[in-house]
Amino acid sequence: MRRICQYAAAAAVAASIAGPAVAHVSLQPNEAVAGNYVQTALSVPHGCDGTATLAVRVKIPDGVLSVKPQMKPGWSIEIKTRKIEGEQPKLHGKTITETVDEVAWRGGPLPDAYYDTFGLVMKLPDAAGKTLYFPVVQECEKGVHRWIEIPAAGQTPDGLKEPAPGLRLKPKAP
Image (cartoon, rainbow, N blue to C red; front, top):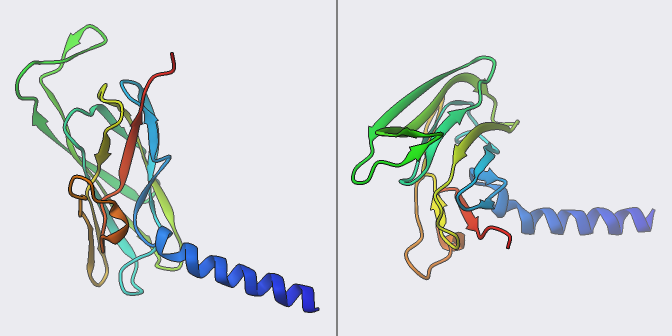
């Protein structure tokens, strides 16, 4: 019995330490190879002040191309696009003049007591060492979380109240 209590106490301490790290919307996985396609998902771990999530909107950073959101039963998807400024990239032999600017899932509801993921497949820029930030607005029955804070140069996202999810671009293997 004593051993069980020790394990329970250790688990409670670990949960209290890990709690804040998973309290915000994040990308899973949160790193990928630069210049490649990636399948990742926004992980939404809770609602707003105890109420259910009704919408998740994500802004796609510059340089990301060919974005496709995951279909979710009970949710509709809205996609906003933007013109690509400057040199027009090519994908699969075709010149790309616009890309996805924002993806919004609406519906659910996703109760506060549960979590869910919202998937994206996309072509990443060839910018190894860079972290891309995906600002997210989470709309709930009562309230909104704006996971839009992007760390300044040299700053880590740890001190931010509502950090935007980040995706670190790794170099290609030699």
